[in-house]
Every structure is written in C-alpha cells, then in structure tokens.
Image (cartoon, rainbow, N blue to C red):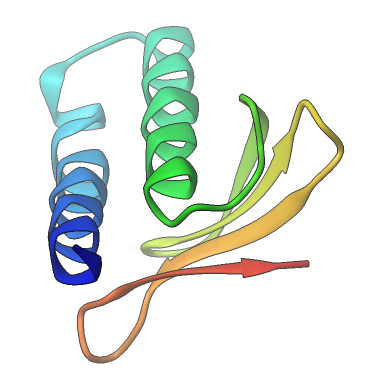
Length: 88
C-alpha cells in the first residue's frame, strides 16, 4: 500500500510540475490548479491539511505551502525523484 501511495504521489507531482502552466491557463487558473494538486499530494502522504490556501515556489519543484488548518509544509522532489512533504 505504501508503494502505491508513493507512486500516485509521484504521478500527481509530475503532472503538477510539468503540465500546469504549459496548458495555457491564465495565472489565476494555474494558481487554483497548483493549490488543488498540492492539496492532493499532501493528502496522499497522509498529512493533515484540509485545503491549500497558499503556495510559494522556493525553487524548481520546491514549494512552501500553507493549509487552511494552519499547517505549513515544504513539498519538493528530492534527488532520487521522490516526493517529500516536510512539516514546517
């Protein structure tokens, strides 16, 4: 089960990072897509969040995320290509 969640998370982040802005959505639309995708990634990792209310890109494939429940996370892809969600 853990491997399945990891694979689904990797698919979600890959889609998030490669497909979002390339679809030609306006900036507001891509912000909503980013927040939705990050919400899904955090949930797939089993972390409490509710809904992402803001996300700030720190570097490529590296986001600082604030949730509606007050939680903050760093969501990034590590050097092994795995998605990591660290509580801040």
